[in-house]
Image 1 (tube, one colour):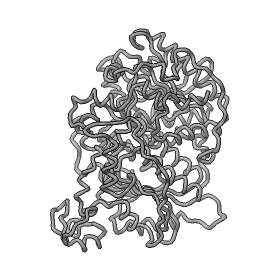
Image 2 (tube, helix red, strand yellow):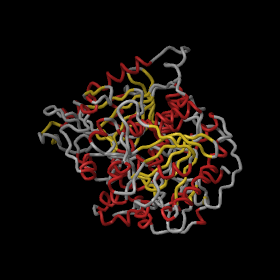
Image 3 (tube, rainbow, N blue to C red):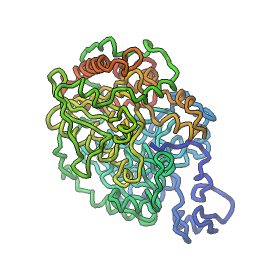
Image 4 (spheres, rainbow, N blue to C red):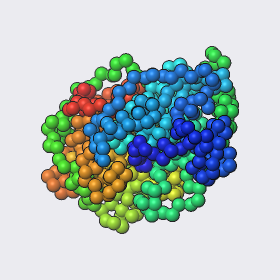
Length: 602
């Protein structure tokens, strides 16, 4: 996943669209032509010579879209958090303070109510000036609260995106905001509230793979770039030469990923037409019929006053739910161990944990992804749907499985199998072991960010029990795409992170050799993830690791799944969805210090 470098001195700071100056003239960032500043403002910060769209701040964006005098800012009280006490070349807390001073904003998103051509709308506008518009806990909370305001008032919701991706200084807490916002959009869908996403430049990573691509209608501003992985990440990761115009708004339109591309001056009229078309007189009921797919059954209202009661269900002795019982290990050796070729794969576990496992293939649209496997088997006589990322034990097997980096077809295959499980009433078990989703050209052409976002949205509303287990690498949005679950467990020698330590080191320290330090700062080891409430339990492995005794490792996984599924199977579909909604709604970046989310449940 592309993530923001989170430096307050982004290039946008020198953009004439966002920098105040006493000079009457500005220099266009694209053509380097000199433009009279007043003329540039009147043209909505679009260069009159070359047509380049300079970035707008969130307040400027609101003023260009909403009716004059109609804007009422939604001042949601959201506390900034530094859950990892993260420090790279400077402490994260200092970065936040500098961003606030430089932008005058509390965070990288501004939420408001207003009207557009006379029609009411709730708006969440991102501001790239604030740490690259990165998605942190506060941003996720603000976008979710704005969505809930739209749901409460049954008002159309417009989200305007501009982001480099997830905020790595918050580690897996940032990753959880993708699930939280995806769940919020699922509730809007179920209620028939019209949503529109306006993609502005740039929109990458965690934002692209969550709320940016989940709206009913997606439009892009001319010159915008959107993708799951940025060009630099793709070139560095898989050494692919990128075609001209890659990931631009026009590229997205050509590949059927957005509904329209507009120059800035045409955006407001286009949005007005969309809102008018979606408008309906009071009393007519929902704008569209509820979806018939049982996986999309309407969930209860977004935030039940009280969560459902939970069944007392003691875990087996090899599932640790109290972080005080786990030693605090150096993360880097755990990272290396999680990648070992000897570790059992999903198909290894499928053959040992389930009886009569039958693999199912294909997304029914474009093909089959070898990096994503799934099928039906039974666990103690209970049929379940198993889905997971498949690696291999040799380099040839890894290459054949694309190193467990799933394509859009993989996530769509997973979605097809989840919908089948919902129709049949089968629990879903996901096993996660991936460095991340595939970042290649074809993946971007086929909508990698869109596929992952849809998976997050779907999993949040599945009316059947869902249990996720990280068995090796839990890499970024590619892992989260299978991890929105009722229970999330992690094996003792596995990891779960918003970004790889190498990627974090290259961006923040500009030195790949700093990967061990980055691993330590990211808090990606099981004991720290349990302490922060990201996972519910840690599955102890045989001495020396799961690969030393695959039979015992599989038996423990079987017991852990039996434990995790037991209370879920007693709940109704509505209760399951309500509990899952509450789980991710409460992901606010706070540190729970030994009170993992599941601890209060049993």
